[in-house]
Image 1 (cartoon, rainbow, N blue to C red):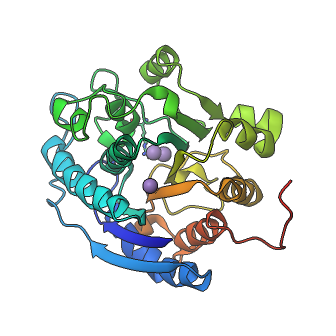
Image 2 (cartoon, rainbow, N blue to C red):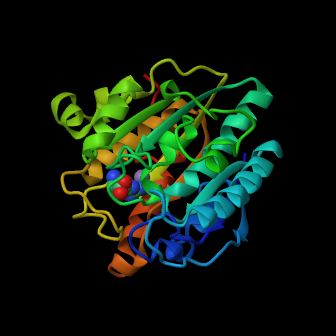
Length: 304
Ligand code: ARG
Ligand code: MN
Ligand code: MN
Ligand code: MN
């Protein structure tokens, strides 16, 4: 399996500047080298290009909509191309609005290959806002809604069909910040949300067993890893920290259990913001977790 790194240096959908530096921070933390050391072939495609961040207030409930569209079209094309060539793409974000481009590409690939899709959304936030209910207008709070057909036409129509996916493909894990109007929407859509209370009550092991239930040989597993999933005490390098996230060990177990399925087909690493970080430690932690996601473990284990 060949892994392709695709850098997307923009913070166009975020409420803080700096996620545009995420791709380089992950490279400096040796993401590619660490995966190569695990025996994988890694190609780094460099960075995609797109419009500058004009840093304007929202218009009709959306900030920077034309620029968000341009970046996501570029992401869709690049990620779909890697999948078609049989490679496993890792999108180095960039803010989480870019998951509209990446996941629409994965969904299109799955339609073409007649494969099932499961998306694990590791995040503090549900990212299910619409222009009607958003408190900020920031489109990084809206990608899941857009992918499910609820958003501006140009974003909703990026893939090969509308909606690109249905809510049932998602399993959201680590959620602890959902806006008031957004709560109604996730409820209406019956989103499968394993919030922090669920993790507190049943533990990360049971949570992941539930989130991974029903995968088979024909399922493509996409992981959308918003770095603010992690507790801010271990991962300060994000714009939208929310306390009370998974610990280092809980995050490791989460990644290791995903690796054990052997179904990982594509990955986003988003919202890493080096401007808020200390000595690139959040990027280094993200890389460590991605090594586990690609099968690094302390011992050789028998499958149980
Ligand atoms: N719910 C808030 C909003 O919509 C925050 C979203 C944060 N999203 C993220 N991908 N970090 O503005
Ligand atoms: Mn595939
Ligand atoms: Mn988030
Ligand atoms: Mn997010």
